[in-house]
Length: 232
Image 1 (cartoon, rainbow, N blue to C red):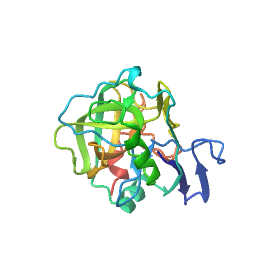
Image 2: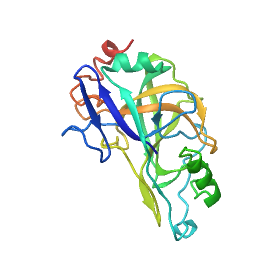
Image 3: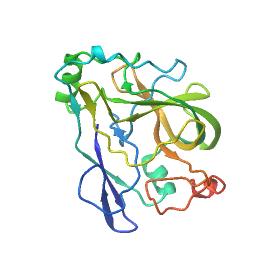
Image 4: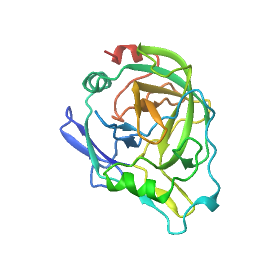
């Protein structure tokens, strides 16, 4: 898990999310996981072809518990177009949320990793394992570039939550999309995070009931109707 610092260069201000000092109106961001070779993005994505994993029973949680909170990552966000170009995302797609899982670990079967695996990743400066919810997404249309998942559906992880004595802190202040809701997904090449979980969707921007797209800048005026005008 990683806290976010979003630098909005156009307004010359820095917005700190998740309990850090910052602007009165925090930027809405999904929780990120840092990929090995490039800009951080949201939490990892499970392989698209399988079913949503089932959360492990509370009895599997160690009594002492693990809490995961992270450092800081800085993002230069000016506009959606600039953000896509600067981070060299592969594509932009409009998706529908098909289902949302209960809280679970980001392992292939949703069960709690062994203590040794949890500690190994954390001691090496990574957060390979975390608690969150899996959002199964159905591709509606590709707005720009490529849909890099292997099939028409993909699973996006939103980190944050508590299972038994274990807890993953969330930096997200955005209201995630609900089942049946629309969202704009930024796609990239598949990246293995070493846990049997990979990611192709790096950011997910919810769409509200009026068609407005909620990006990292809460004042940015983008709708599904004019989305193409804000793409490279």
